[in-house]
Length: 516
Image 1 (tube, rainbow, N blue to C red):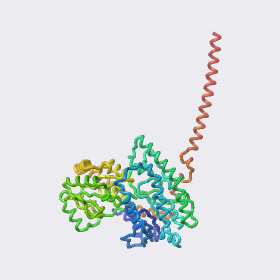
Image 2 (tube, helix red, strand yellow):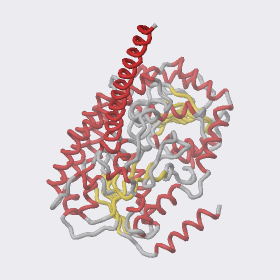
Image 3 (cartoon, one colour):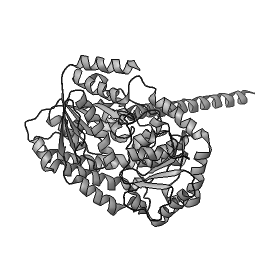
Image 4 (cartoon, rainbow, N blue to C red):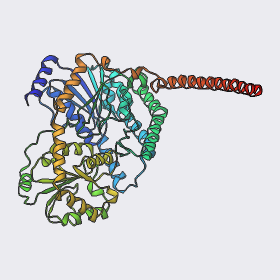
């Protein structure tokens, strides 16, 4: 118990002065902001001078250090409009490989909207200085130029597990045989067909990245930064990659020294619940099922037949159901269901009367349920949620049910299976123990490594040689070519010699027969 506190104190004493740190978190999804602000608030609490570029303002800024918002005004409002227009519930599932060009175009536009924003332009053309720039990775290479512009060390935050976007930055390998792309939703032990699709998907991503995304991002750097550097120089100037991952939440994958797991750093110790909610949970004689589809997926937008199937399944339960529902009324709401537009999810999951969490399997929700050792029914809808649901099911602390397959009978069957067996809760507790079994807490780990970058003036000593190799050397194509040519020459000479020997032997045999 005292070891993490001692190490944290030791790091603080060794560090000794406040650093100026800029965080760039441009995505308008609330879940992404939670991850960015959790990191930056922790840095401010350690006495650092923190500036955050994001679409949101911090309602509860830290009391220590300095915390300043540079708000991307209009981003959040535009995002909410797009969420309603897009309505992921009603969309036909598009293959992830087809989505790659569309997503790439969207992220290039987001990168430019950020750099073109009045508040960001004021920052770029100010005389401010920073020691470190932390940028959320989401196909936004141009934003890494903040570090070059301010002559700062660059740290990248991956809000999901290790993936090709961050692997390339620090020369981390991506073995396609057992590391599926996060958006495909495959298990790490893939079938032959899945490995073929994974390889094709990776190849398409690389082609789109090199042929479209990087040139576009390079143009943005030149357009919005004075004396803007080349995108390649910006990308491969990363001192550290912080990965929102852990062996308790993600499949094990290779890491180079510049990559550090901090999965679960946003999770806070349980706080006291509001009085009415505390009484509701305390008085639930048969326990409570908590149902939430996260901050981006709005429950009220789901098709009526799906909503009715969920209502019918809940109505048959003896347990109470707490449902995050964004409207004032839920048509046909059963008597055992309570709705609320917002709920303190982490604190609810910590309550002993909560028996089951029904979730969309977003990464933050998945991490939080593992932290609290709660069994899960995962209903993935898009993005990395399918992969998260697959991992939940494979690790035995929950079940998965595709939203497109959801009906009253299947939902009831899955809920009853989870509530009727202690195995899922037991496995959830085991998974939670793995999550908590660390030398340092994830947020202390993040603080240590960020301050490590500052103390040592970067991490050049951790950089692997892969970043300095041409692609054909990295994949040993020159070695394979030479060995292939050498092998072919040896085989050719061997065949020639063998033929010559055979002719000599045949001639000698004929001469011998003639003498007889």
